[in-house]
Length: 279
Image (cartoon, rainbow, N blue to C red; front, side, top):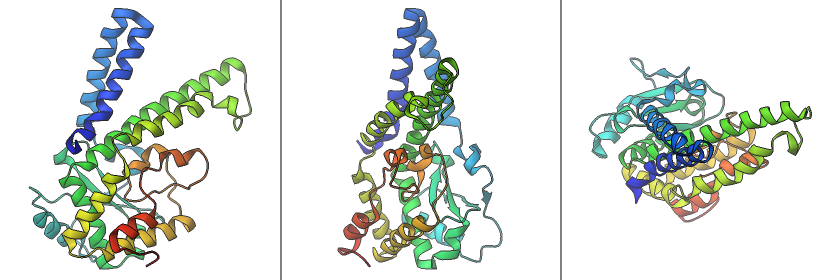
C-alpha cells in the first residue's frame, strides 16, 4: 500500500482527464484525453519541481559547509542504506522549512530554507535531514510531490474557470463567493482526495523511523515545537497547493488554506515522539 501511494494521484488524474474528455467529445474526446493523460504523466515523471517558481532560486550546497550538512546527509544516507546521498539545496527565506523535491527516486533533492540554519541547532538539523532521507527511502516524497502537482493542476484549472466566469458575468468584487465559485466548490474535494492516500499515519511513521535513524526522538520533537512557534510569527508565504511538500504545515489554520493542511498538528506529533506535550 505504501508504494502505491505515489501512483494514486497519477491514476486519479488520468481518470479525471479521460472522464472529461469523454464527456466533452465522446469517443474522440476519450482518445484525446488518453493522449493528454499519457503526456502529462510522462511530464510529471521527468519534471523536477526545483524548476517551479517558488524553488527555482534555491542554490546547491557545495564546497564550504560550516553547518556540516553534507557530512550529516552522507552519514544518514549510509545508515538508511540509500544508494547515493541526495543533494542539498538552500532556499533564501525568513521562514524555517524543509522538504524533498523530486518525482523520481534518483532525482530527489533536499531543500532547506536559510532560516533553518539560523534558528536550529546541529542536532535539530540532523533530525530534519533524517526525516527527509527517510522520506526518500520509503518513497513517501514521491506521494508528496505528486500530490502537490495534482493539487496545483486542479487549483490552476479552477482559477482559470473562475476568471472566465467573472469576465462573462461581469463580476468585479473579487472577494465575494461568486467571484470564486469553482475554487470554492473544488477545494473541499481536493482536501478529500489528498487525504485518501496521505493520511496522518504516513507522517507518524516517518517521524518514528527518523527518530530511530538518529537514535533519539527528542531532537525531532524540538524541531516541531520550534516550527510551530515560528510559523505563527513568520509564516511561509506560498501557494497552498505546495503545502504537502513541507515537513510541517506552513499555512495558517484559518480560511480556505486549511484544506491543504495534511501534516498532523505539532502537538500530536510531539506527543507520539516523546509521550508528553509541551516539551
